[in-house]
Amino acid sequence: MPELDVAAAPRIKAEIRVPGDKSISHRAVILAAMSNGTCVIRGFLPSHDCLCTVWAMQSLGITIDHPEETTLVVHGQKGHFERPPHPIDCGNSGTLMRLLCGVLAGEPFESTLVGDASLSSRPMRRVIEPLTQMGASITATEPKGTAPLQVRGQPLHPIQYQLPVASAQVKSAILLAALRTPGKTVVTEPVATRDHTERMLDYFLVRTLREASDHGNVIAIYGDQTIESRDFTVPGDISSAAFWLVAAAAQPGSDLLVRDVGLNRTRTGILSVLLRMVAHIREVVEDWEQGEVRGEIRIQGSRLHGTVIGGAEIPNLIDEIPILAVAGALAEGKTVIKDAKELRVKETDRIAALVTNLGAMGVNVIERDDGMEIQGGSPLRAARVNSFGDHRIAMAFAVAGLFAKGNTVIEDTECIATSYPGFEDQLQKFLAPDRNEPTPVLNPVRSSKPSG
Ligand code: S3P
Image (cartoon, rainbow, N blue to C red; front, side, top):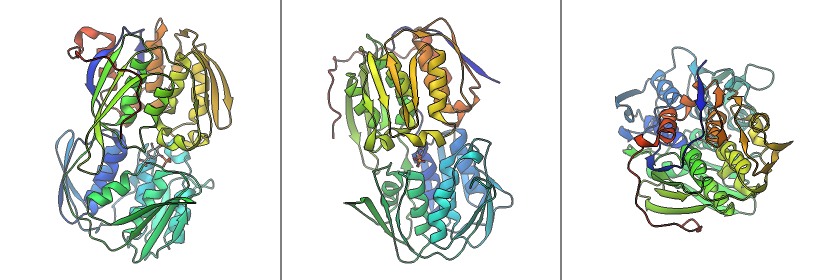
């Protein structure tokens, strides 16, 4: 099994770009496939997770050309799909499996969704329940409500649904099913989760009504609308940038500029947390023409301080908690992560994985049911740690290794390809700075609030 050997790194002084956003890439392919014509998607993330979405759409009869690694030409079929000839393999991707349930809920055929061992242990009742209320027939073949899933499409009717867990995947599955449902479907989320589906629906000229209420964010959508084909460019993934943002933030003297990255407010929770940890950050919004805010982030290294991460900000940084836990270990004082029980049902139990690996690197960490308490500031010890098959655990500990004396080995790093092809190359550039892109000459940055 491939492993990653990481030595302590010198200061990071670089200007970088990160690959396209994973959440947005999935949605762009799916909505383009449902649209009424040809869409060119640029900046697509060619990671295993997102390629599974391309293959899934192809097996449903959609023609997708792939002229360049990050460019797709998707020939939409106005929401018409063909019965797939074999089970659809969602790989490691919870987003794909849950969104596909929504897409297929109203299709007049039967399909089977399968995934790898990790995906096959993740909860699917949260998506089956609302789609069943809409009239779909979805069966989890395992007693615990996990994949393989048998989807028998049925005529759907609209529902009003209050999400019991804050999940953008479940919200999106309902919205996608609602596109094939006559009438008005309403979803209420208790706290704001990433709103890429809603923004992309707007961009593809599908009307949604959105408002805040006492019960949370309300999103209403009328079915039977035409999804107008349009070209779209995916911004860089802030969840991938997060690894380098922390690597730079925690090392005095570092200076990192990340260009062309998504700055959607439902995803930038990490910047708010790093500011509270007294990081020096500047964020510049450059463009929001295609519904998604994008721009650049500049970060300069300093001594970080511990903080408390919890409450309504959790969904806006849920995927960044592994690297924020590493930031907590590098910061002076205590960092508390709470209200994050969802981490237990991600690609692995991320709370358990983080506690194990931080402990192996000599960090004093206490596991809680919904998070952990990290006593930061002591030197990290180089160690041999495992990814637990989870891309974000692998990358978070590669960054931790940059701060440990000696060599840190991360075992089982194949999983990195699910979200960040090119991560290892970027890491090598930071380890051998001669090969870095030219050092940017920029004015100093102070701790400042994110703009917008
Ligand atoms: C995602 C939503 C989040 C996130 C996942 C991607 C999405 O999951 O953790 O990596 O693209 O909608 P949940 O919806 O389960 O919170």
